[in-house]
Every structure is written in C-alpha cells, then in structure tokens.
Image 1: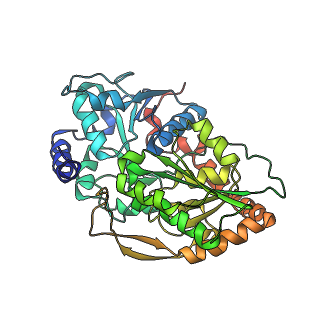
Image 2: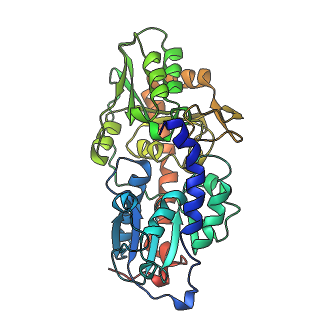
Image 3: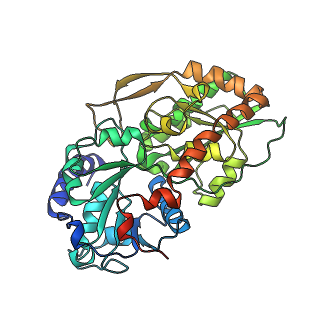
Length: 390
C-alpha cells in the first residue's frame, strides 16, 4: 500500500482500535496494591522510549517496585485479549505511549491482567489540541499524565483528571568547559519519524548559514538525524541545505543514551528551532549536559526554560503545513525568527562567559524538576496507595 494511502487510512484504523480497546477503570475500592508496571518503548531510539526509561529509573530511585514492559512485541502481535502483562494483577499500570499504541496494547492483553490496576496514560502531543479520539479514549484511565503545561492544556477535554508530570531529569554530569575552544560546536537533533517540518532541522541549518555566510574555522554545526527514511522529502531538503558547507555535518548514526550524552557533552550550543514540542526532552538534556541552548519560545519547552528569555527565539504562529502528513492541517504551530536565532548564535559562539551565564540560569529549573520526582512528592500522588515499595 502506498505511504500516502497508509497515512490516509491511519486515523480510521486508530478510531476502530480505540473503540474496541479498553474498559472503564475499576472503582478505587476494588483496586489492590502491587508493583508499578510501565509499558513503553524501552529498547528503542525514540524520545518517548527515552522518557519511559527515565520514568522507570525515577520511580525505582523513589523506592517503588517497577516492572518494565516493552510494548514493541505486543504491538507486533496478532492476538486479541490473550497476551499476559508481566507482574501481579494489582498495582499501577502506566502506559507510556500515546492512545493509538495504548489501545493496541490493551486490546492484545487479557483484561484480567489490568482491569484492577490503577491506570495512568502518559501522553504527549505537539499541537494545541489533541485529536477528539484521544479525549474519548481517556475514559479508560484513572488519570492522564502530561509532561508539560502545553500538553496538559491540549488535553483539557479529557474524561479523567490530567496531571502535570514533567519527565524526570537524567543523571548527567556536565563536561568541564574550557574558556576557549575552537571551533565552537553547535548541535541540532531531529527524529524524522516525528516530521522534519515540526523538528525543523533545515531551520537550524539556515540560521547557521545566516550567522556564517562563509565556511568557518571557528564554528561548526552537526545535525543529528534519526530515521531519515521516515521523511525522504524532508531529508532531501536538509541535504540540499548543507551542500558546499564543510563546517556543517549530518550525523545519521543511531546512538545509545550514553552515546547521545557524550555527543551533548562535546557540544557548546544546542539549536532547537522547532515549530512545536510536546516537551522538548533533548533540549533539557542538552542544558543538563552543559550546553547553551537556543530554542523556539513556544510549546512544551517553556516549562523548563523559565527565566531564560535570551535563549528563547521569537516566533509567529502559522497554520500547520506538514508535507509528511504526520500532523494534520487545521491547527497552528510556530515559525521561529531565523534572523534573531542567527544573531544570538553568533553572540553565544563568540562569548564563553555568556554561555556560562546561561548554564547558571538553568539551575533553578533543574531544582524544581527534581523536586517533582522526590519520594515525598510522589507519596502524595493519587497512584501512590496502589504502588508497593521495593
């Protein structure tokens, strides 16, 4: 089936699955305590997979018994309500995947394994309003976790409580930053499964070209790409944008979490001239690794960039136009001002003290995010009575 037809049929298939899957969550008095089972993309190079690993690590560090359930095998299966969910029958079930995947998982696993669990959907979306079927599917959960205020607002029509639960901070030790290092290394990330138009790596390249019209010895840009085959036209446009510039490199190798952290530690400035982010985990991890950042001043990343106005690039809101078809028309997202981004990039690249000052400004945001995942705060959450300790 041609890709265009698959994209056209996907919403219909999703609605059918969402209708067949799930079941009303059990009343709290019928629940029994047990471990926290997290279903997610644990073994994959995906932002949502990275987030699931961080969630499991954070809950374990807080003293809870956690069972990791990798959903890929379940999603690839053919069964209907016959698979098993690892762990006991009670406890908490966090589906760390969006409704389309969560519905398939619930349709494949026998209900007796999850009907008496406290159910949480951990969802992220990158436009200001989630699709209507997301809100309808929320009736299958006791609560929904949203990683950012942007996503929580997009879920305002949900049938259950929506709680703001930002992703946990990874344990990262920033690399020592020499006062002078040439060339200054700028870095941008883009997973093209999430649409080249949204991630906007071409915007990062264009900002660099405006800042440095001629090839540089003192500055360089690396654009880390995941799954270039997912958006061939977007990737072709990106390749054309770097032609003739030896100071701009495309890196297509898939990296582990540890390798990604090492790449961030070796970089000085992280560019995210996205059109929208549900959260922006890569931006946060870059900040933790000690990079200065420049990011579009709209959507999920605003939650962890408070007080960092010089790092936020101004934008205009425009109608969504995604040639890949991942994001539908009829909504809006941001168009970052590349001229402003270029000017700030040059200033950051030329001033190590300015980069150091921005790193210092980020610390208050880190402290606030760490507090959200502290044992004391988690113990006050609604799920806690049904989650056993390790």
